[in-house]
Image 1 (cartoon, rainbow, N blue to C red):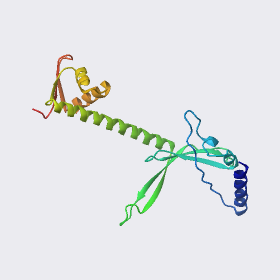
Image 2: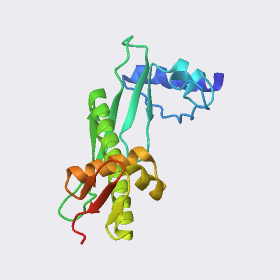
Image 3: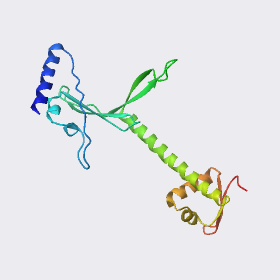
Image 4: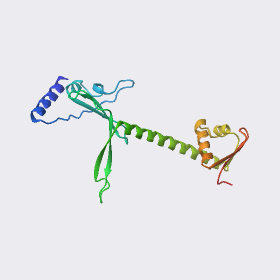
Length: 193
């Protein structure tokens, strides 16, 4: 609204006279399903706030993840910065493990590396859960299963791809021995009699 614009313009004039910068913190809104995010579409309320600002940085992210910072507008320089991230770390002293806070700047490549590491960790955790379920099932049938891999998938009622991957990992690391032809197999959990 014009009231917002007038307020920001007055602060801007005062800042120029005092040779200081004014930082206005404004809440963003979540875009509706299928709606464009970023820029003036991210700001709650009037587009006048976006229009009045010399520079706009949009901060966003998920809990436990680095904050993504998008530079949406820069009237003074004419060009915006590449998207980057900020992460926080607790800094301990001799008494208090949360004595201070360190902000860490992350370049776009570092953000992507972290996302890839998190994806790999999630896949690994998922693989580990499926391996544990396969082990648990095999233990429940005495450590040995007679039948094909498909029979085991059916008996467990789990996704075929996940169980087959778990079986491959278990064989590769020596946890499981599979003998016989494809249709007439015996799977034996090592370490079980």
